Image 1 (cartoon, rainbow over the protein chains, first blue to last red):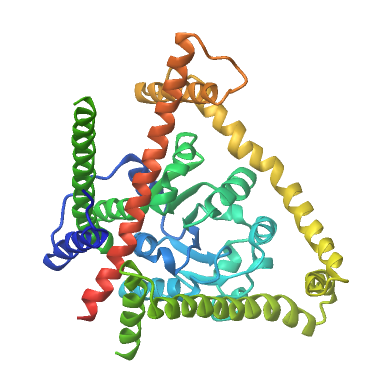
Image 2: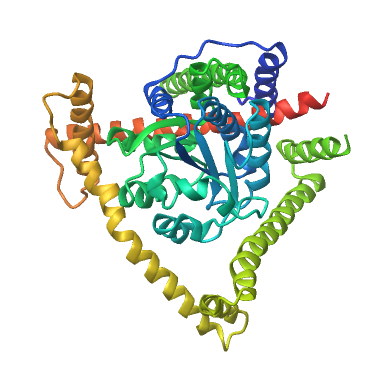
Length: 272
Length: 198
């Protein structure tokens, strides 16, 4: 017996729409990598600079923008000064700026004082190397084209090592590149938020303490929101996610029962 | 409102493929590729050509001419006779990339990983020691499974190989589970956009 794929898609759609429309929320227990991510940022003091690399594009916005929102809120609320940059992906520039600007305005924080948005710079790993020697050789102006030498960042930061952390929000291989160049070479501590597909790839780096904390996919973002007591996009999404997972599990079990039942029947038929 | 309508149309066009391939899906697929390429080109032109070449040149910084000329050699591929010219910037990039990367990459991916797995400290919490033991068993069992040059006829060989397969399956299962979660997260975002429209 074969279940038509249209029925499977419809069931999946229903399982996702119902919790989203009804606004069902579930308790999410934070895991150790997320708690470590949160604690790493709580160790910083007001006025410390951190660099946040936005290494994703709109195709993974659903997973990574909730992380960016919560991270920006967390940093600005604590008075830590995030410097948002983008060396790996051109497409996130405007999208990321909109998110950061909105949260900054909500918290009455000023751009180029409480946070900096630098946008995209070409050069990839070569640019990272250059930033290790002279940060302003890569970024001499911000996202809007204003020169950075008139702002506080120019006095406080000279090289990558002057940042307390590098935080990579990534959907590609940028985290491993930063681990190689920024963490190993320039000894800047790192934490990261990555898509769920990549999360299992980065767990060995938590074990070795090369990554001090990790947010994995929407689940990681939801756990981070729980720690900050925010009912954001990720927590709302995780309820729908849970319903979909229950449906998928149910369909897998159903498929297996069907497989074993008919296999037994076929065997009996052959024996007869 | 108009933007939202366009977004809704594009979403429904893409998902119409689940029923069957159609002209709306094909149009949207090409539309997205075209828009992405155009956006990327403009951003790269602004941040690369204007910021890193035109502005420094206009300020009298002639040092940028050398990398610009090297970059121009890539266009040699447009003609068969000049295609060999593209090999020079490519060789330069590969050489620099390899030179810069080999040392730190070995330290990041090999030295630090081995160090934290094998080093035993009596002060480590019991679950860290337990984890390390599991990692070492998984590492050797999986490596043993892939040693095809050995004859594995003894029962102990089969036990080690099966253990290796078990750990491989756990790894693949975790990756697959995370992949499902990622894809559903993307679908949730799309559904939220559609719900928001209505």
